[in-house]
Image (cartoon, rainbow, N blue to C red; front, side, top):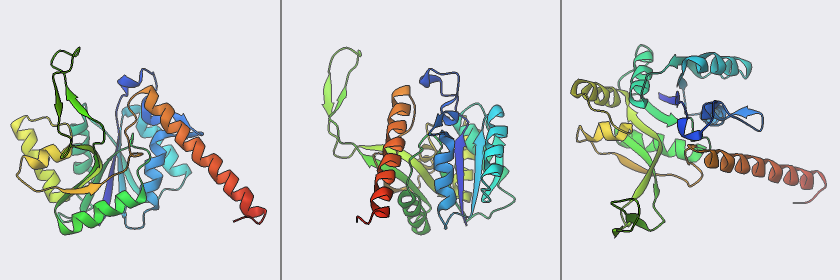
Length: 245
């Protein structure tokens, strides 16, 4: 089976807003719903678990019920960190799946994840035990040691932005989390935990639009993309009704 673990527990402190980013409304829909509905549409996804904050549990459960998102099996209270939230999600699903099932861990704040990226993660993890979405660095990269002046430029040839989903067999990612817990190791993402076990992680090409909504500028960019796509669809539908190709 292929199980999506959607992370929607962040507080969104860098957004400078009282409302966590995943609950902001864009085109009358909460941000978390965009990626949730995309995963739900992918036929190869068998089940979805959502990890969220204490106030988010009710909000997401109500949304799931209202929109009849039958693949959502549980909405779980997350922890204090991203890593703890993932582990709690893994524990919540342990009785329903087996060790060889694939777990696609995704940030709800990456609201524009595509079906192609999801499917490519599944296919990559069918051949390997771990896969992760990446996006090639296009900009010139530099280092500043004092946050005021350039010190050196970095060769970007082998640099990538890490994205999600990140996909693993259940036994591998649970083992990686348990090893990290035992060693008191806190990573920035799940790939970091798996690399500690000396496992190979297959690269899956991502997309520029699969950015993470972190700041208010990101949120405005997301909103402009959503509303722009909506307007383009209206124009297309209008032309179709009037007999234009």
